[in-house]
Amino acid sequence: MKKEHVLHCQFSAWYPLFRSLTIKSVILPLPQNVKDYLLDDGTLVVSGRQDPPPTCSQPDSDDEAEEIQWSDDENTATLTAPEFPEFTTKVQEAINSLGGSVFPKLNWSAPRDAYWIAMNSSLKCKTLSDIFLLFKSSDFITRDFTQPFIHCTDDSPDPCIEYELVLRKWCELIPGAEFRCFVKENKLIGVSQRDYTQYYDHISKQKEEICRGIQEFFKKHIQYKFLDEDFVFDIYRDSRGKVWLIDFNPFGEVTDSLLFTWEELISEKNLKGDFSEGDAQEQDSPAFRCTNSEVTVQPSPYLSYRLPKDFVDLSTGEDAHKLIDFLKLKRNQQEDD
Image (cartoon, rainbow, N blue to C red; front, side, top):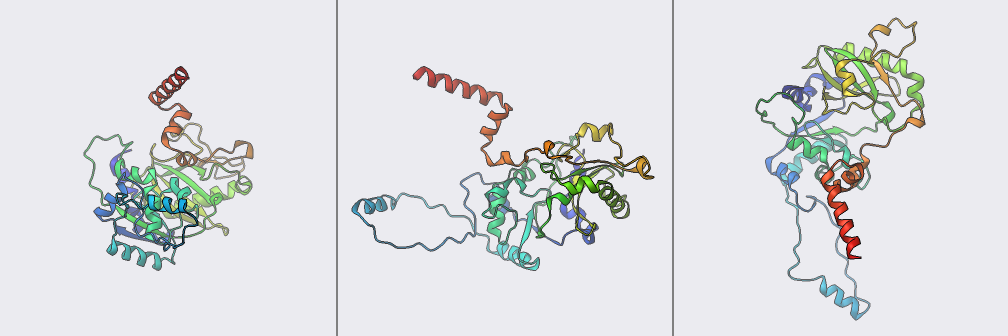
């Protein structure tokens, strides 16, 4: 995977080519001061938030009065978020033009790992403050800013990136109708259920029909039209069987391979069509993988983002130094006792 492959998967690079196949969206340049605010590692204070007016009440006792006086210390610093009036206006106009609710993302990533922090536990945003809350809480967004070429093999200088806020018209998408498609040398080699953490009965029963529809969509609209010959694209299949394009991703480790492994996809070993012997399309069909029963359901990969990273590293053993420090701390506590 090269840096140019990553650049070709930026939303603004592919959206003009496939606008008629995907969800209506608006792309806004991200000002430098907004980027600086999103990368600021300080306390999370969301710009533009409307706080309820303070309520005045008389203390019921002298003790309560003392507590109120204590909290009114002159040295107490009040954290205020920076304001971006011009950008706020542009964003709100764009949101209104898309029906009043949007799905936000940057050049590549959406803040899927931060949905839990929103009041509605969703990526549905109505204001810029909703977007800021998700973006400032997301490791995926930070990675877009700081490590967009993390898995690239070429050692050329990093290209200059013009960051963009992408606002997509909000649509209620059913997770069981989303699929990820892997393309190598302009050939569709694999299709995976997007939400592999759940078992969907209709996918198992209709997998031949689903795969056939995706393959027809690929050949008609995507094949030989994207900027690279190796890439990944996500689609949504609605209740009528119509296929919609959702996103493009680089063909490499930076993209989640879901129910495949990247070793399988790169080598094309163990990849074969899943159709019956009588199907004439068998030789040309991609491998199709889905969660086949509730026994094979897996935990959501986004759950770990609800915990501090130190906790996750300790529980998985991924950071040996943290584990050693933790054991030393426990030993010192025992010695003190």
